[in-house]
Length: 466
Image (cartoon, rainbow, N blue to C red; front, side):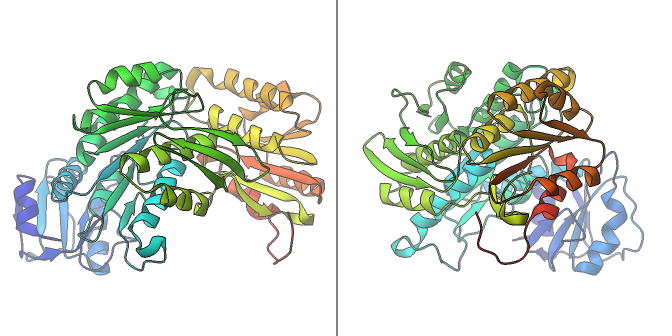
């Protein structure tokens, strides 16, 4: 990857010890690999400097430390780069490394759907770069954000994974405050930037949905004037994003006919059929991801692929091979042959409403298990009450809630709702309700860890169901 002295020069930093080559960068001593540079991050609740010795034992060949850090147990020849702020140093190193590559970089942000959209884009691109559109290529040619590495620590780590073999990079960008997307997009310098939508996610730190929309528009900051801005034409802030994009090329997507990329669709229980309208062709896609919101995600991915000049056949193949991301509307076999839908990765009002639409389309008895939605600030109670009303309007049979805030959703839902103060109480009731004519969907914000419910309700034996 690079030598210690090169990294120090990039960072305008002092360094000491041997001048060695490191093959990668890690911020976690637990997952660090042999030959990597360990970046000791400092936060309110952690001090990476305390784990330098552990990192060295795991195989770290060098470390990046803040100037005032004094870790114990390091020999004088162990390479150490000293910086003012290790978090910013990580970003500077990532920006330098990204600039060594000329491949197309796609940046993706939005309140909802950014992870699924990122994975759909990657699925299409993996088809495009593989011989004869076969995706069993042993060499990774498409770099896509892994897990939740979408913040000011994760994005630099993803950029530092770029290698000569990569033909495309798809970088997800999340945020919880103004300026974060602007920082990330300056590091990534995308050729194409996508905004999926704007909603109430992270409204606690921003104050209004309009402020969220403006924060998402920061992704254009790192987009070159020759780049392409892609956004949801049906979002109420589409005109704002169009204005912020300036003179850049714009490709909008949506279900309105005047969108550059659009679709006519037929919803199925777990498969959507759409006539995908690209600017120069119309193709049929069988999308194995339920809900209208996933049609929007597919349109965003198709818009990116079309902008890159990907063949329409490969766009179709990539979208049809896409499987739901872990914890996002995953179909599972529940106890007593019930259909269990795992949508536990995260939750905000818009994503819960999308889940309600999927559940409403199910056959038989419909049950929602809902945990609290976080980061909603002063609007939290009202937004939970609104979800209770929406769940009632969606025709759900029962609503089971867990958490202080979700109690307001249960109260608004009325008859058929039950609130629980412990997960054990909830599980006891939920298990008693499962049957072969039941569809049960589990949803909640990350801090609620609602996947615990899924694990207890899932049928672990290999049975034919759903």
